Structures are given as structure tokens and as C-alpha cells.
Length: 413
Image (cartoon, rainbow, N blue to C red; front, side):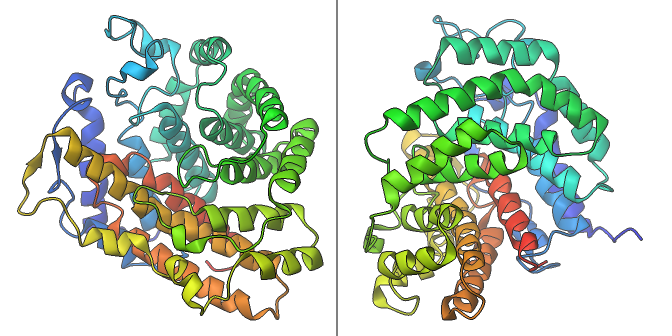
């Protein structure tokens, strides 16, 4: 039986999809308007279902976010010449045929937006925009486009290392683990690029002297953890060994994570929680419990307070402008970018907390507390996910989907 779709949700999807129909030249560098969120948009995603539920309405709203950006080319980035823009900073001719991930602001966001569409289609086969998602996948993952991606990655060995690499591995794993004829075709097309990335990631981790503990893209624990998730879906034995060895080498002796340092003003992952969630994947339960006792403070302690409070809710109160003013200067664009990261942080914290809880014994007192905190953070994420305009909408939905996948796996849906 089809679930009813709230009119407000249809409005949200229509507004987001409308941006995909606009000319790329108008959108790539357009002014950011803090009033572009439809009235009640955040509530549409949150009010009809709890934070751990992926129903038809929420899936439609979340699918609208990547659908609105996958055809919207990256803005000009002088530091990334050659992917979409030549040295003279003119758009490459034929990029729509020779590149797969040219939308959604930047390469890694295009990859994770593609992943979000795929995962939503797998979880909700009756999704009304399913045919549109398949059309976008056929367009973006053509043989020619993936040949272009492979050529670019081959010539640019550190491009998107390690964050974008991890998302590419996860995307290909979704296809490879899906009993769907189209998915098997797309998995095969992605295989050469992901084989290259897997080989390079293993080599990179083997050469890395120590982990990167930042709260943004270079975070080592996040990349290893997501790559391990991918390896569990599409077996890559050599990469899995390298991932597990690196995790143990980098983190097994850690203790007393400096929680007071979190969050940074533009963090979208929690270094402490991501490390704890990763070690849950590579340690035996008894050893992990002892390690976690020494690594994270008690949930009700002052030391854990910085991880208890959702940064997204607090950040939403500090809007850079009111009354629908248009933001045009670079400093305020940076404010919106930083805000979008803190909104995304709500979902990555919730995801990590659920993975930590799932690795603990059922009678461990922290399990209930971590699940409750995950729900609180996810709720804050859903309530604020449209508060950073396109700086957020081009990627935050992917992290909302990733959290929901983890929540449903744990039986919270």
C-alpha cells in the first residue's frame, strides 16, 4: 500500500529539483540566499517520522537533494584545474560525456550524492523518483564517463585522497552487492577506477607514519571505517588487511581522547567518535570494551559534554543574516560552509554512536545512552539540514541516509 505524500514534502522536492533545471552558468556561482529554504522544509523531513525511520516521504525528500545537484557543475576551483576546467579556466568541452562526478559542488560530494540515490533506491524500491534516479545513473555512469574518470584518477594520484576514495569504494560496493541487472552493469563500469583507488589506498596507509585526526575530509579513521564497510559488501581481501593493520597500528594504543577539542568550527566528523567506531570493527568485543573504557569518558561526565550536545542546533541560532538577505561575499559563503559541516556533524556523530553501541555487550550501560544521544543528534540534523542553502543541500542528505542505514540495521526503524 502506497504511503501518502505530504504536500509540503512535494514542495520541498519540487523546489530542490527546480535547481537542476536551471542553466549551469546561472547556478555555479550564483549568490547564496539564506531564505531559499521552503517554508516548513526541515519539518517535512522530521515531523512525519522519527529520526531513525526511512519511510516513503522521507526517502523522497532525501532523494530530491542529490537529484537537484548531480547535473549542476562544480563552481570554478583554480586549485583543481584539469577536472572540469582547463588551465585557462574555461569549462572543458564534452565534460558531461567524459566525466561522471561533475556535479554537487565538488567531486566527493557528487560521488556521495550518487551513493545516496543508489542506497535510497535499494531501500525503497517503490520510490516515485526511482526511474529518474536510474536515468541519472545511466547518464553519469556511462562507459565513456567512467573511462574519463579512470584517466583523470590515473594522472592525478593524490586527487581526493582518502575521503573521496572511500566514497567511491562504497558506491561501487553498493552496486556490486545489489541483485539488479543495471547495478551489475554500473558495478563493472566502476570496477577499474575502484581497483585503482583500492590499490592506492592500501599503499597510502602503509606509507602513512601516523593518522590524520582532523574533523574534516583528511580524517584517517573515517576513511578506513567507510572503506571497511565497502570491503564487507564487495570483498577486497588485500585492501581489508591493509585497512585493519592501519587501524590497529594507528589507534590501538590510544587513550583519553581529547573530547574538549571538539567540535572545531567546521568539523563534520568527530575524531574521537569516528576512531571509537572504527576500533569496534577491528577488535574483539572483550578487548574493545576495555579499550573504550580508557578512550572515551563516561557519557554523563563533564568531559563527554562536548559530544553530548548537537552542534547543529546551536549553530542554527547564529545565522549570518535575517530577513532573506542575499549573501554574496566570500567570508559569508565560508560561514555557510562551516555551518553546513556542523549540521552534517549531527548525522556522523549519530552514525558513529550507533556503531559503538552495536559493538558493546547488550547489558553495557552505555548502549542505551548512546542510542538516545544518536537519536537526539539525528533529530537536530533533520531540523537544520536546510539551514545552509546549497552549501549544505549538495551533500548533507548523503550523511542523513548513511545514518538511517545504520539505524535500521540496528533495528531502530
